[in-house]
Image (cartoon, rainbow, N blue to C red; front, top):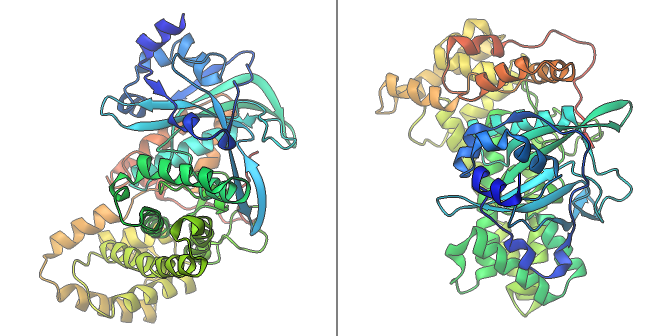
Length: 490
């Protein structure tokens, strides 16, 4: 199949605006070919939304593109350079195993990055092999698509192919490449890279490009770089509140893993919380709990402060005035986060209006859940359907007292009980990608059986449906003496 045939049949409509930035920000190169790629999974709805022909993508030409063996017409492949604070320590980084093929322009005129993850070594690999194993790539596919279904801004997964080659980690593992779709891959770390190793003009070029791509509404602001900072703060405050509301733990909130677009990115050691505990950590490398569930809002603010620092030279010519502008902007973050979180919690409890004591009501419930080791998702699901007898809270004096206050609170709003119940149904998912279910799917996939993963994806595709078919995915894992751990999968 020729490149022209690939373009016509698959629907690629590619441009690479990022490649028009200064050379500082990327390196041009092609993926390292693989020997025998095979398609594992293709995201048909996502393909359609991108203006792509799924039938063509499932053919030999499409698989060759997903493997990096063939570059579609119009593509300008490159690896992006960036930096990042990794567990608080600043490092020079970059796409060590990823390649931005180009940007797909959809029929609606939207622009999305098409990136291959696991496509081979780059100038930023720092000794790594540039490859990825099948399990972590399928894990990202499952969880990123679950996040999308939950209504949380996220990068998405278009396809996973096996490479026909092994990668060596602790053992030989089947190699794979994930095709990731994102509004962009511009990170806080991209700005840190520009501020540290670029000129002011190069930093300004990146900022102007980011505004044009993600925040065009601020282009004519009196101080567009201050407006950029303010808008990024707003998006991140909302995003992290959404994480907290569903019990999602990112696991590695380094500044290179925070996008300027406000999307969730990099599903390495992430997981969803079962039993409610603010100190929950799953990542094998987070030994001090820096990125624990309860710390995520604070870390979000810390990362945004690092972003604000990169913009100081653009905010004002006077250093003191620039610092004041940045600090004033940052002062809004925690208030915005709390507003988003409390609004979401009110919805989870079926509360439409606002009262001063709502935050205390919510926090008291979480305290009781923590004390009695109640499952986070299932507790809110039980509140939704009035089945609290199925939870550890049933019969406790603390919950009985709380429930009386809660019912009184519900009774003080004008909306009907039916309306309140519908709000709760729409705000409390029946299912999340529970860790043991994800591992079950990955174990089966490792043996060549993808049906377990397909059933899981079907259950996760509409988490607020509350169908009988979803009930089996609400069950908790069997008790274990070993704490669940996730890994970066590099």
